[in-house]
Image (cartoon, rainbow, N blue to C red; front, top):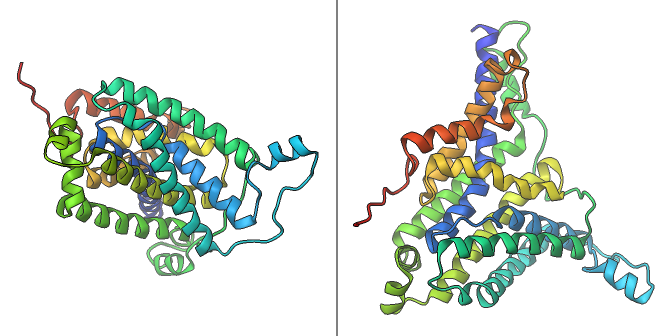
Length: 331
């Protein structure tokens, strides 16, 4: 096969892998939107906060160490021990569930039946609060996250694909971490789809999304559903934080991945779990191929804006997205 064609295939495969990482973030948005009908601006910060907490627990870091040292004149930052990865992940999940309970108790229960814009503004405030809380608890320095995931090029893929090209083609460069992320995303999508469609709680979640008052009238606990869905969104955020953190380090710019999830949701639909994956794959492949074929002709850096242009086109011709529900209101 021509080497140029193989390079394009490699770009497409890497685009699919990047799209999976986008989709992992978008899944959290979909879950919150299905339960409350709002765009959760804080989802990216949830991923950041979960990753910061995981690193802090792993390294035995003392929460609020900077405040404690400033108040008492000490210089202690660590407990002096490290925590096994599995236990640190389990405790981080507990932290995210406790955070979901706190969000419901102190924010959401006071906003029942409020306009969607009020709920959206509440998530903006929550995002900035959690970002500041993460800074005070764990510090603002860039942290490395190591949970034992394989990284680097997959030698098996390189050797298996090298035979497809000529002497100047050495095989596809596919990161092992991207392969793991793809497998994890597939498991998450299957699990969440089954939960949403076939479980009692999943049906209750959809009922709450349609009408809060009607759901309350048939005995559905709105508070329980919100705690449940924010807990699941927190766990999904932890998975996304682990993948992104292992790839590029845990830093406060990690919260900006929420902005990349927005065009993914526009393509896939705000209410569709499979749509989040498909939208992520389309964005990932599209931006990589566009950069590969057109980018050099117009100065490069097209990955920064291509996704938003594609999303704008979808908004014009199909506002509900590929898998979103078309809402018809009687006037």
